[in-house]
Structure formats: structure tokens, C-alpha cells
Length: 117
Ligand SMILES: [Zn+2]
Image 1: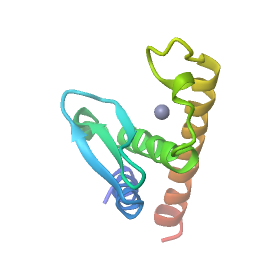
Image 2: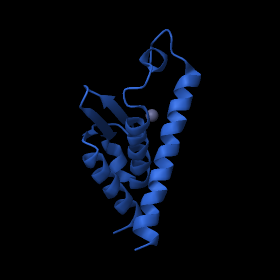
Image 3: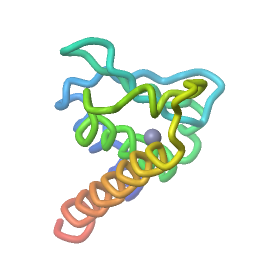
Image 4: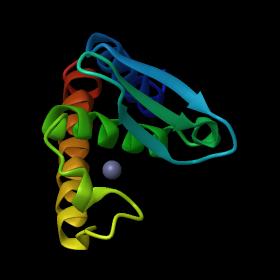
């Protein structure tokens, strides 16, 4: 199995183990993380990402970053699109944290599954 395929497969396993619902979304190349209730969260990944598993892994690991770093801790007034209190610096900080989490996670997966096997 190719490296990118393996990394994506493991990220999907982590998503399942994290009890986060996963679905593909039509006509999109983006990812979305949603907290549905106290116990339930979802990640939607644009199905156009199926053509580029490296990018799919990047997006999925970023969304897992939102789950692990900020689940239930985000000030939605400052984060939400269209909110009159939206704070671009606050949004940038959260997105950068999710990116960093995702990059670290992908590196750890590559180390475990590609270099140490
Ligand atoms: Zn994000």
C-alpha cells in the first residue's frame, strides 16, 4: 500500500476510535468539523479529496485537531462566519493550532508505519 493511502487509512481509524462520525460531502474539497451535542461530533470531507489522498490526510488530520484541541472550548461569537464579533486573529490562531496538530499527527503515523515497519 502506498504511503499516502496508509496514512489516510490510519487517520480514518483514529476518527472512528475517537467516536467522531465520518461522512463524505458531495462536490467539495473541504473539511468540516461539527459538534452536534455533548457526546457527538462529525467530520465531513469533500469527496473531491478522494483524488488526492495526501490532501485528504492533511484536511482530516486538521479536523481531528479541532476535535482534540478545541472541542467545546471555542468562543463561537468570535469564530463563526457572519458573526459581528468575529475576530480574525482568534480564528487564525485556532486554524494554525489545528494545522500544527495535523502535521504532527501525520508525521507520527509516517514514522510508525513507513519508517519503523
Ligand atoms: Zn479548521
